[in-house]
Image 1 (cartoon, rainbow, N blue to C red):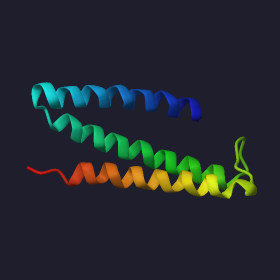
Image 2 (cartoon, rainbow, N blue to C red):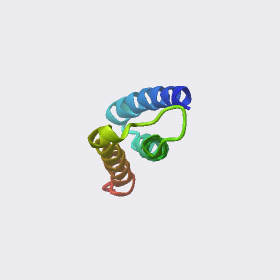
Image 3 (cartoon, rainbow, N blue to C red):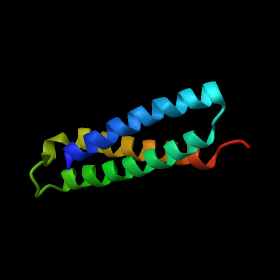
Amino acid sequence: MYGIMFIISMVLLVFGIVAVIAAVAFHVTWLYTIYAGFAALVFMIYLAIDVQTIMGGRKYEISPEDYIFAAIQVFMDIVYIFWMLLSLFGSNK
């Protein structure tokens, strides 16, 4: 699952660069809206993976001593989801 998420993240990175260049050079703002929706979906999947990693019982798990790292990981996933949703729905028209 981590390999698939790495590939999806690299696609998101390239798509984000293309969206920013298109928005600046050609004034195509709808491409950034698609990017924000796709990024929110990717970070929701990351949140599910991180929660599963915290719960344990799979190949990868976080030990109980690493609770600060786990809390920061989940917090950052939630912040990125809200940031992308704000970019998606809070645009000025």
